[in-house]
Image (tube, rainbow, N blue to C red):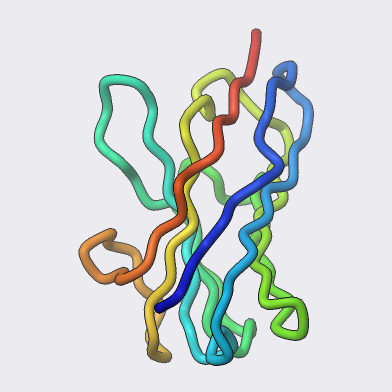
Length: 124
C-alpha cells in the first residue's frame, strides 16, 4: 500500500508563489509516475502535471505551463510542484497521485493512489 500526504497549501496573493510537497511511503516510489491534479469548487478534478519515475520526463496542462514546475526527489520519496505567478483561477484543492509504471499519465483514471489534498487559495 502506498500512502501520499500533501503539504504546503495556503493563502497567497495573485502573482505569488507556493511549493506543494507530496511525501510518499513505500520502497518503490522511484518506480511510480507521479502526478498533480486539482479540483476547484463546483468543478471536476483536472490534471495539472506529471513526472516520470526517473524524473526526466514531465508534462503539464496548458493552463499551468510556464508557471508550474513538477519535480521529484527519489531519495526523499517526495514529489513537488513549484507554483509561480499564481492566479485566482488556480484556487483549488490540489491532490498528488501515483501509479506504477513508466508512461506519463494525465487522466485521473490511470492513477491508483491519491493523497487527501491540500487547499490553495489565491486572492486577487
